Image (tube, rainbow, N blue to C red; front, top):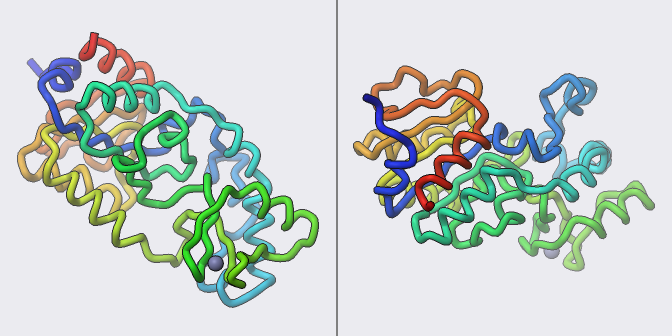
Length: 249
Ligand SMILES: [Zn+2]
């Protein structure tokens, strides 16, 4: 008999939740790679080009402006809510997400527990002084002037996502790694587990013998790994939402 997810959640006190794009498909988040995705018709702008060329920056901001309101107005889904419920029950050590939609934060996951490994679209960050701000004024100024918005310090604002060719933040990787070695259950939700180093986070935990649950509608790159304790196939919002309800009920 395979273990039952509500039982695993009930027994755990330090859950590491790892999430990917599949948890936000019900939230109105644009799919860059899908049939209507921006990258079907346009090339991604690499970080170095952004830093060196105003033309590249204008192209970058133009792409980001095309779906900013969709990101800004998206509402959290059932997995985001279930993560908050688990946190309030004192069971979460970290929520590590590959998503840049900011929806875990919007749902109420504490900043201290949230690791956005690929950054977030919900803020802009100055590339010189690292100050962060709400993106709305940048998009308004870009649409009016068609110039890359700049911080008071003269530095370049950029959505606080990790761009192509940009290093992941060491501090975020360290926080994710710390959670991976201290959790007592790891759950990967809505991720194909195909993007590294992000996908190594749950694996680090699993390789230490921590029970590892993978919930995703489609196949994942960790399918068939002996470290996977339980694999559920189906709607991640429904499956994880129901399991958290049952565990806390
Ligand atoms: Zn600045």
